[in-house]
Structures are given as structure tokens and as C-alpha cells.
Length: 246
Image (cartoon, rainbow, N blue to C red; front, side):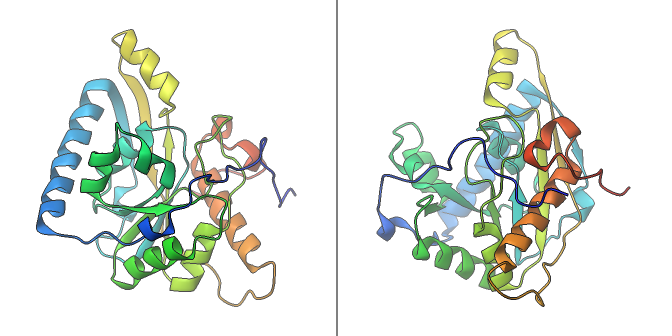
């Protein structure tokens, strides 16, 4: 059985280094209101431009702490997730988005934990751990980037580190149909794109595992859980796993 899948291309490394920006956003009343507004906007966009099928919301705990892990197909992932997940999660985002003029104000008002991909970003990890200690949900894409193949890539160890360090449940959430090009082409043709969001049952990573392989094994468990929730064509380098139990 394949247990150490590799990515088709090297994972990105942030050229920007601004660790002072990596912090847990303060949940002010204005930010709370803006998050409610954004959720409504996301639901409107999903209604107008997609045909969404949502499964397993009964598995999603109403209270934290918990780490939400998702597969990452494209920008519409965030719209679909924020539209339907019962609790608004604290988001971990790549620092490059902080300097995208189209998104800077929006993301600043929302509040994002900025992370420098491929670099030892202790401040970002500390901010995410603090959110979990406060009983919040934190959402992260373990692949570390938008998939270049349209299917699962090898996971990185950040999600496993957070879940093990904080000792919190992991909530697997999988998406299909949210590739940006697919959604864009459908919009141009005045068609609604079929998309799905599936919430699996939360699980806790085993604590008895020790040694240098601990993170690798925990990452494998996370990624294989995501793969089992996805159709075979979306499983990518984890195509060897079977279907999720019904």
C-alpha cells in the first residue's frame, strides 16, 4: 500500500516574510457583523451560480475547539465553505493574499491568520493554537496550496501538528466542483455549476504514536480520511484508499 505520496510539483515557499502580521484577529463586534454579512453574500453567490449538494452537516459540532481540514480545488472553496458551515471558522491564509489589492480590505475586515508557506512560521502556528485554546474552529487546507492537478496532493504536516499539539478533534470537509476554471466557464455559459460539500465525522488523532514518524502518520490519516469522502477522480495521490463506510 502506498503510504508516502508525493506532489507532482514542489510545494510553494513564500517569498514574502512578514511574521509580525501573523496573529489571531480580534473578534470585535464590527468583525462579527461583517462575518455575518459575508456569510449571506456567500449563500447568495452559491444560489446564483451553483447547484449545491450539502451532506453531513449533522456531523459538524456546533462548538469548538476543532480543526477543520479541507481539500483545496480553487477560490470558490471558501465561498462554499463559508456559506454552509454552521460556525464561522478562523481562517489560515497564505501571506501573499495580504498584498492582493483586490482582497486586502475584505480579508482584513474578515480577519485571517496569515501564514508563510514552506517556512518555519511559529507565529502563525501559535496564533492558530491560541484560537483552538479559546474554543474556536480553525480551518486549514493540509495540501498547503490549491491543487495543481484538480485532485488531492500530498498533505503537509501543519494540520497534523496543530491537531496533535492542541489535542482537538479533526473535522474532515470535502468539496467537489469548485475548481475556478469550471465555475468560471459555467458562469460565462449562464449555467450553474454542480458543487458538493461533505462533512465527515470528527476524529481524534492517536496520541500514543511517538518518534519522528508521528507527524507523517497523522498527516497520512488526515489525508486518507479526506480521500475516502471524495469520488475516485478527486483522490489524486491517495487514489489507493477505499470508499468511506456508509
